[in-house]
Amino acid sequence: MFAEKIETERLLLRPWVRADAPECARLIGDIAVSRWLTVVPHPYGVADALDFIENGDLDGGYCIEIDGQVAGGIGVKGHLGYWLGVGFWGQGYMSEAAPAVVAEWFSHGDGELESGYFVGNEGSKRILAGLGFRGADIVPTVSAATGLAKPLQEMLLSRGDWQARNA
Image (cartoon, rainbow, N blue to C red; front, side, top):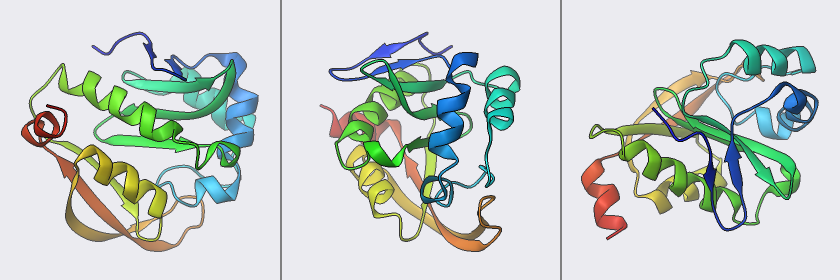
């Protein structure tokens, strides 16, 4: 359903492969990253990354590669989810990757796209606002990395809002 790979000005969004597992585990295994994600446990090791790569439903999921280096992940499986390793924060990479994936998603469907962020994650809040997402409910959600319930701001993006923002 989704494109095999997506290329942007600085990024290659491509399928995950086994060789990505050690770097994936190192980057997402950093508690500074995993604490902002709902389903990623901490610690997160190479075996976890291999299980994700080999057994996960990765349709619509991409490894974010920058200059041949694994930098993070992004995909749509029920909702838009994404992450970057700490060394890649603040450089506009997700602002480049997310619109490409959202455009691919809307090229295949008309429904609303869901996403969300833990309250306090200002970077993710900016990414979703920049895409045109609108706030919905705030719900307590347990972070798998910390085991703590935190407020999650649910977000919605309609096809019409996406098209209006990108006209």
